[in-house]
Image (cartoon, rainbow, N blue to C red):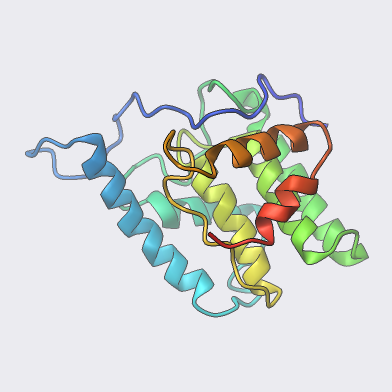
Length: 200
């Protein structure tokens, strides 16, 4: 069981732009940064979701899940793909992040070998555990959802079309998503599994 500092709740606020790799001679709004992130993520989406990725392309190893975050955010942030060294409002203690990620990788391998869960529950549990750990300074939710979608795609199931503004207050699916994550914190994955079977 992961010893989270706090239960999964809102998105971690972006209140620190240190590490921004965009040209320094310009001023940027948060919307500008978000657009650049979306462009970066689109490249990773095309790479992994356009067709089912092989197990070599998406191995779900420790090195690969780190690499995925870098591929999603590395054109925008220099901390992409690097484990956080600070405490966040949610997630495990920073000093346990590496250990918890290794446990997740080991669990994925075990679940696959023993066919512990069906494809949707596997994707759901990967997603939830990744969010619980919250290993990076930012982008954890989008990375976690990408992990789940890659798993679905790799197993010949279409990915969920998560909306990029899923945690925006005006998004009609926001409450359902956060509620499902909180229920999964308590071991009830039913509603989160249902979300992985839907497309928005």
